[in-house]
Length: 160
Image (cartoon, rainbow, N blue to C red; front, side, top):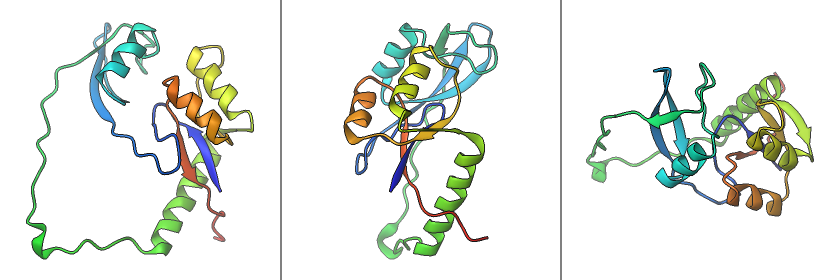
């Protein structure tokens, strides 16, 4: 079972779908700097032109990309290093911590997730973290409309 979650701009819409994201350093007309994740430069440009990117500090929607230094990739000699996959218990525990965080800090909108995510995106509903259920078709439509969200495995809560 998976839940769909909208937490201020993360994006991984469908199970098995891997999204390459770009982190931009942004600056509003009030000189506040902040970061934003986007699918690509064109997505930032489109959302910015629609007034959908705003400063978290002052709310200004006059936002531009700020200059930033490239972060070079480090290379490692991986010929002698075998990657160790995380243990199942570690993954389950991390997902339980994530679930507890989502349930504590976000509103469960149930099967109305797609409609509420769209309303938040369009500015007709209050901006907030939400979670709930969406069908694959609803998720696909949200992604095609540039609405950023995340699908996460919904493991049973911990016994602790």
